[in-house]
Image 1 (cartoon, helix red, strand yellow):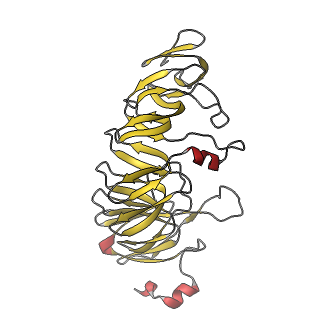
Image 2 (tube, helix red, strand yellow):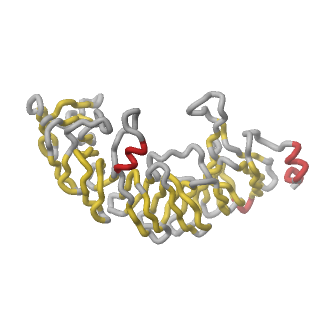
Image 3 (cartoon, one colour):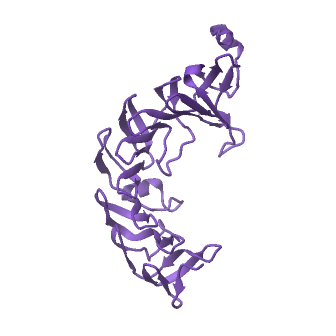
Length: 325
């Protein structure tokens, strides 16, 4: 079902109003309008203020949709003609791109929205950004942001840092450097962060080196170290450790990072980190499959992982007696 009405060659009627100067339209398989490119000035009234949708093309913002739409025809994202201050639940912020929930609430704010290419470098894009300062209790920092995400309620959901930026976060387990960014629970407590370097974290099954070498900086909604709203550790990802689990009266089982195809070369090793998820009395270890153990009925041992080999090596046997326990 169409979510728009074509008034003439350059005007489109949508649930929120009319867009003029439409030069290109992208439609989904079911006929709904997904995005448009504009060549005339349009002002769109939103929860973030009166926003001026992009209508001129530049080398750093080439062929980007001016407006994207939800299936209902309501605004999903607006690329702004130039950086302007937008209204957010925490005050005014500079933005070149904003996104919205289908119900209209602000979702993400992107201070810059340039397209990195041979004609526009990351350093040039960095020069367009503006450092912002935040005091969240567990972290006081000034940094360049790639985006800031909100819950529908208006509470901050996550901060995504600009490439190359890092900050420090304080947790019950210690103070750690963070890259890419971090996420928050709706009550404002730290939900997760991605370590800027491998860090040692005390978990219910032993000390684990937390770090995900495959982590990307597209968004920071979920990092390698995660906590409940009351600050209890709930998740850890590690590419540096393997975990021995031996239930009472059961066989020993090793869990280790799983080798996956490298995104750049078939000749380079690449491993998907182990994920450890903690509940009140269990741990679930994900290593390609999910394995849940009761912590009070199982023995665990954390050891270094280097080559993806599962099981004990002669060197392991020389230094431990786990098989006889």
